Length: 293
Image 1 (cartoon, rainbow, N blue to C red):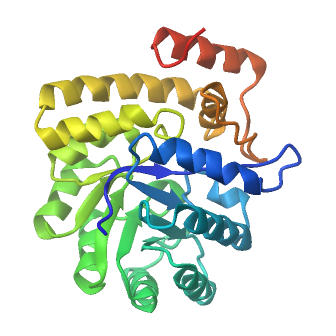
Image 2 (image 1 turned 135 degrees about the vertical axis):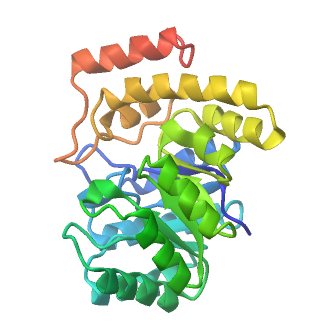
């Protein structure tokens, strides 16, 4: 089963006391899959990975894999800097039955090339199945295109590359060097650009409250309707700006409550938008035609 298209980087549902809401996974996943989402990405940095222990992220992964079955593939991001701990997580993810293992560069220090290569390739080799390499400069150790190419050269079971660098010139260089690797946009702001450059889809946050919007642009590019896809991308950028007004993740969680999927408020230090910001988001989404008054 390939991995690509409209992929949701899902949040972990939380109760009012900040604990994981086991009953929240089913409604959230059904909402996404019934609207055309093609894959689920668990443990993502954008979906508050740093607010959860590794045990909690694995617990969420197990609940998601169990609920989804074989309906769509599931990826899981290993977010451990300690190689020993990362390898323990790989064993657990393999036991649970994840389809794709994602691994980012070690962070936040500026590690040398040899250390990065050993880290990524050791994790990739331990998994054995399809691996996604993720370049996320926000963790404090953004990788150059030449370094990404070195990783792809050496770690042979990396089949996918998720890019959040916003560096389109660098991405063209990477795609030219490794056209066989499936590239996914790591930003909702560059879905059109990255798919037009040869990418196979997006790992999206906006897809959580508005799955039809992201499924739409992916299908427009796939079908060759590039003029419509470009207009959809412009609209997505407007939606993204509205949701970002709610902080790193709070605006997305609030928007989900507005479409009938309440996954709770984020844990500190992630913030939930205050009343004034929530009203701005709500009114903006009404004006954009995404929700009703």
